[in-house]
Length: 294
Ligand SMILES: [Zn+2]
Image (cartoon, rainbow, N blue to C red; front, side):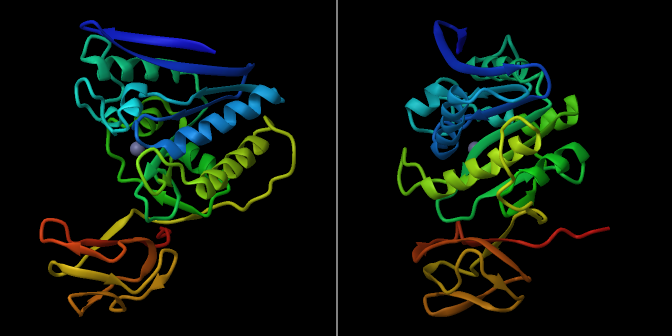
């Protein structure tokens, strides 16, 4: 294990790099780019524990389990020093503020990756998914096919993210995995973390890095995440569950007793529990639709 430290104006950010094996393929896992996304950090730690006991059969596995350790210590998404969202500023700037320097350092540390999987967390109430720009990057699509989790979502492709920059600027096979967080700050969602770990182990088996038979199935590909809003504020009560298929016009819940309808056909990715909602945030459901083949 190596520790890499970057500093600016007398403050430092440090991260651990755990490397196992040697040679090609180079497979890299990152987690904790957003400091409060601890289910991803947990999965990275499980991978470190595995490779500490079992050397890769071929290639190099590099794991950076807590990229943004100061943000993790504060249990927040962004850097406590410069308030930057680290996953919007890649490839970073070695002469910039601390987060920009950290991004530049991580970008250099991941430059040799053939495969790059970046572990994150989405909201507490959703389903886990793989996120990639699979329509832009055939390499990314092939990587996603090897990770045996059920749902692969198309990313909006926002620049400045480690995976989008790595796909576009370095032609690497890169993706994100989004895991629902646990029930409170710092808590791990163990069932989805274990599902993710199993999906990654299958990918590593396909690459010949880990022994054993593939246990899971390739994911189904979907389009981008879509958001359904209630027409007005009030007391929201859901009537569908995550994973449900809904038809356009189907009742998905009520606000103050008035029905709220699904805008389109789709599968429910996350649904807000019973809650008071207000006009500044009427979002109640996130849904996806199967990939539209050309
Ligand atoms: Zn994140």
